[in-house]
Image: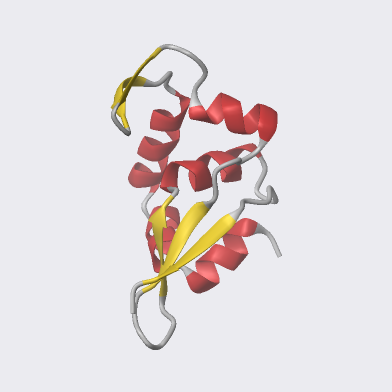
Length: 103
């Protein structure tokens, strides 16, 4: 099963990304831009874009999915840009996943 099919089945946020071309395009464009500004307290300027990094090396940092309630409803907590970039590069690309339970 490819990433899009799997996530569309279990993750409501991804469904919103796939059904909203403007959001999808915005996330994709942002992932292609070189990093700038502050991220996690460190200043980044220039360098390789997230998209280029994923294209060369795949997704290294796991996306975070969280269980929202007792029915095991799952939502993307972190990793929207990685998902969009990986899907654009190769819809069958494997992405590491970490689960977080908020119950």
